[in-house]
Image 1 (cartoon, rainbow, N blue to C red):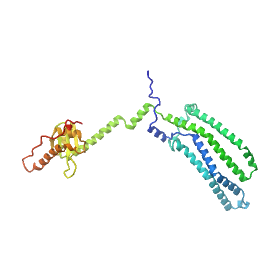
Image 2: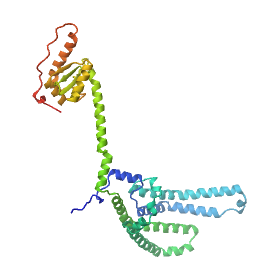
Image 3: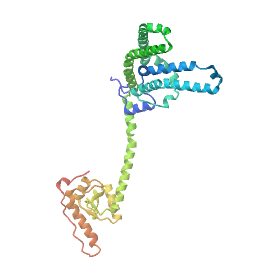
Image 4: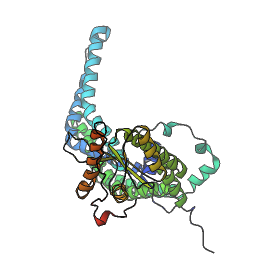
Length: 378
């Protein structure tokens, strides 16, 4: 007996599923990538801004600790001193801090985009559920987090030991240096530490980023039934679509019937088809089909025409050709001009002469309808 795979999540997430997950704040995220980018930003900051940072720190500490005791007793001078030191400290730290803030946003934007969702902030009972907690503790995600933590510990510890080993003389010599020299050496030590930690975390991030993308896609995968249900919701239920089509058809038919009283002639089969034609004698276009119908609709067109004194002319081959080949609102094709002109000429003569003389024009009995139009039915 074949297994039912309809409940297995084997289908890739649809665009709607991905968009819904983004609205809920569910996107791929990698903490390791964020830490790596922050350390790299710190490394770049120390390389290009380290000298200015240490210089400003030196000035901040020397000026802040060296002042006349009399200034303490003067509130105005003390406030001015504090304001000056605060401005100097901000000017020293803001460029470095701005670089770190930029790196903090760069990781999420590069991986899953910047997303803010109120749903993600809402409390959820599943977050405090013991069973859900056990699943998270012993799941693939927890195992991956444990492996990452061990790798980070070993790599960072190794990098730290190597940096301390090769910088031991510098660390010991800090106590014998001048204040400014010690700050400069400390800045160099921090720079190489950031570079070393960034280098080893590249390995961890290169594993974590693909895993997070794969795990996020795996969580959003859908069953075949979910895909079918989503397609039904997107396209609409069959009964709703049928109702909409029926309403559209009714509106279209109503607009069509409103055009029948303005027609010049109704060409019939005589009972199965009816086509209403309108010809603008002052315009340059050909006659247009303003309404057409078959069987019951043809009967309705004839009834409206009779109620509004619109002439009805029986021409079965021409009626079938017009009904089958010309859409409502379109002009008649060129090879039907002659046949339609015969009918319109007769109708216009009938309208003009009918009130002036008892002698009526002779109705045309033969219509030049090409063989390709004969018997056409829609």
